[in-house]
Amino acid sequence: MSQCPFSSEAPRAPFPIARQCPFVPPQEYREFQQYDGPVKVRMWDGREAWLFTRYDDVRAVLSDNRFSGDPSVTGFPSLSEARNAVLGLEPAFIRMDPPQHGHFRRMLTKEFMVKKIAAMQPMIATIFNRLLDELIAKGPPANLVNDLFLPFTSEVIASLLDVPREDHGFFQEQSRLKVLLDVGPEVPREASARMLAYLDALITEREKDAEQRSDLLSRLIVGQVRPGHLSHRELVVMADLLLMAGHETTANQMALGVYSFLTHPDQLARLRAEPDLLRNAVEEMLRFHTIVHFNAFRVAREDVEVAGQLVRRGEGVIALIAGANHDARAFPAPDSFDITRKADHHVAFSYGVHQCLGQPLARAELQVVFGTLFERLRELQFAVSVDEIRTKGDHFVQGLQRLPVTW
Image (cartoon, rainbow, N blue to C red):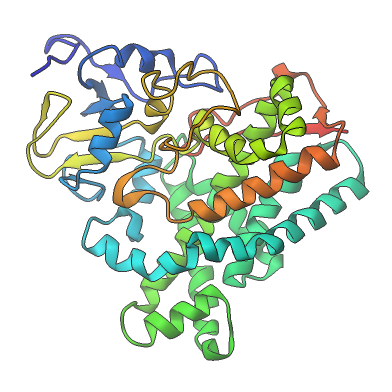
């Protein structure tokens, strides 16, 4: 059994670890990957957790149901006080373990099947092109984060749920507040309460005529709530998850994707010359940025050995998907952005039973955006010096504060 590289007397590495370059994971992850097993890290509250950064080890943890994703289990790692406030709220199914997790997930599986999402592609493209038309009509400069990507992803998921367009700004703001890590716990807690109250009222109204409607919420009311498989409150919490996950993450991925192409003009030229590389390019963007990089926290429900290290029951575990996606054993030259790379085996959507249910929708949106944007805006470029482009920092969802461009 391998030894942890830190002796029992040595201080543990603090976590999260600051990025020297905001667009790639910390160098320490690469250093940790040279050891045979995980390392111990110290969290903000003084407790410790095992940190796995190697591709094979991360997948081993995430595919083993002896590691719990339920934050109420004693020993679950704590990322920050603000994050704790979110995890302490009514749990959505992504924070449940089997079999409860599967019970709720199966209610949505058919809604996000690849074939069903493919049928939505024309609608997705229509929304994006209309918003892009409006952006072009206003003229440059523009902030692509707020002026295009958030409105686009919000409208797509809101169309599925039939959320009034005038309310999109409201749930965008509440979602933004919920993923902040460096604020007081009341900020995400109050944002969550506002969102749940809004959705409770929306679903209460929808229940009156759900049989006459065709949106996703109405289908769940008819197919799951009416027969008693899902309570009204459980649907409210599920809708909150869908709205949150359906726009915040993908919009940030789009912004970082544009940044990557504009700072790698050779890759942009390659995509324009070879449109068939679009699918590859999307997978490479997902791997390279791994924007939801802190979403694989676990705690051992029993003693488990991984990579030669015995993890005791009640010990916290972080399966770091950002580390796995930059492991040279799985992805040669991992810090290079290369759209010819075959990166389909990345774990940007996590792995195992908890992998992202909405990944077909995210891929469809990304393919629409990057198959359209650079063709319609041939002269797209930064409106400020590249040094002025700032990331959000180590938020739960990685992204850009603003993306000023002109064309």
